[in-house]
Image (cartoon, rainbow, N blue to C red; front, side, top):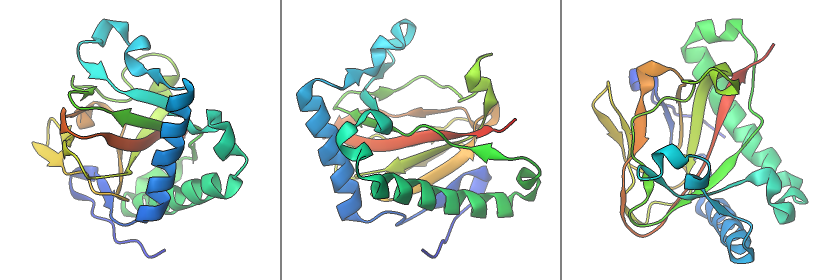
Amino acid sequence: MVLHGDYEDFIGSYSGVFDTEWCQRIMREFDYYQDLGAIYPSQNDYPQTCAQRFDYVIDMSQMTKMRIETEIMAELNGRIGQCFEEYQSVFGTMKERTYYSMSQKVQKTPKGGGYHIWHCENSVANSDGNRAAVWMLYLNDDYQGGETEFLYYKKRVQPERGKLLIWPAGYTHAHRGNMVLEGMKYVVTGWFHYAG
């Protein structure tokens, strides 16, 4: 895989990291588990913000059918790892630390849904505070709205199937998911944590 990242405002943007077939497979697997009743609405995790957030979530490790197919996870982790290595090369001081990414959450956001409040990814004093960077992979782009908006940079990133974003987890990159106006939005997201 040849990377061609863009790094404006410390937001790494990598187009075409995954092809349409790979993305559609993850979406089909998600729908399979949703039909089984194994997917939960995220507002159950965030009752204090339920008016501001609505989507469906499952950790990829819980998708038993996919766990058997280890090449899917290996491919995901490998490509995200390659992009993160390039990100670290661009922002060289990041190489002074070691990082790990251990969870991959698949999210499906229906019309009217999203996480609309401004937030950053390490704003609480628990394991979230150990997050160095965030990554998000768009699985589809056949919907309206649903941009990822960054508050302090006055920037909205348009969803693009197979595009991966990496950005700092701290307050400098407060962001939100804009409302999906039509269709369904699918992403996979996770974090790079400081090791040790």
